[in-house]
Length: 173
Image 1 (cartoon, one colour):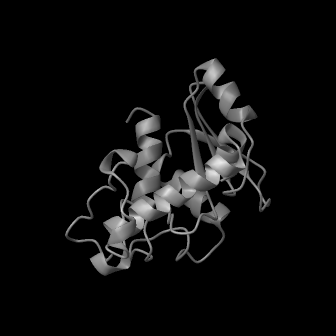
Image 2: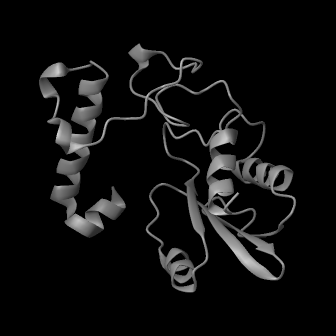
């Protein structure tokens, strides 16, 4: 809610958060009386048939939802979030030189993907309550693709397929 508070003020951010909560509860059938109008927020992406997430657990999508997916993800990985992301990047994007800044820090990490001497992508791994924008702004101003993953956001699993897909898309693959 930090970003919303800074953009709209605390009261508006709380009202927006409450609206989103009511919409998701209404979609999940938890409290149909509190369902918001359909134009208030987009419906979540449908859950594929092969998903381990059951309907009664609430709405879910690709790499997010109330239950941990069976697929490898940041929370069932036998190591730190830093080790998890580093392993995925090294195993799946070996054609790039990858520099890591902030290693060993529990606050934030920055991975810079380079190819042919130029920066191809910058990926930040941050806590959910961060409000840093300097690197994102710098990348936007320089035309460098930028991604952000949160390492401690409840219900956001950062599944391996999700991380690979987002990074591949940002690299134009």
